[in-house]
Length: 273
Image 1 (tube, rainbow, N blue to C red):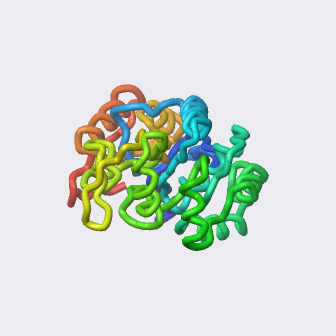
Image 2: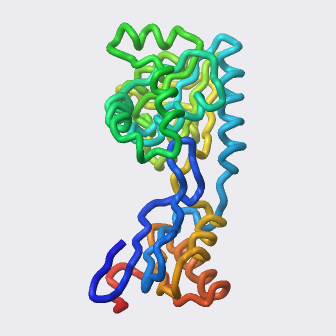
């Protein structure tokens, strides 16, 4: 929120109005606004309902573990790793959950600031129930244990997740659940598209089951529209951070449905509020 020269401007950044197991959704309660800069990453599509997604994720993990397999969950160190741990705890997942990589240090920091979380008690329960990986002995134990391993990096570009994939990927009884967006050109996207992964310069066939679960931190199309509906005042809307077609799609909707002065600015455009 920017207050300057008598004007009030909201810059959303990447946001979501839907609750997750880790964070409460954005409320959009900012009073009357003169201008809003809003993202449009998913202006053309909706995400799966979060509760349905979480249930499907946990049930899929249980299915793998109960047949003796191990599930690798490559996840971003800040936010996504902790959310997945909370999802498993909330659904009373009864099998081992290992936490590795930068997610460990990030989790320790969040534990000291848990008042900002949606459900601090759930988060602390999740953190106390996971096995914190400490070194290679623990990693070798984890890959042999039916359970879930949450580890960075979320796109498999590095971190302990690459070691885990090199071991877990060899067996069809195991699984890799990708829970973050996979940028084209990353090992994670390569896995989804081709069923292979490049580790230490070698292209390896992944025999384990692999699947993407859309735990997005962005609003879907319906949520973006709802966020605009909640805005106070009659602000000018600048739609950014999306494909050009998505920016124009959301801007046109805001103009036609909400009668807002909305634009999809080009790089270098200058506006006065």
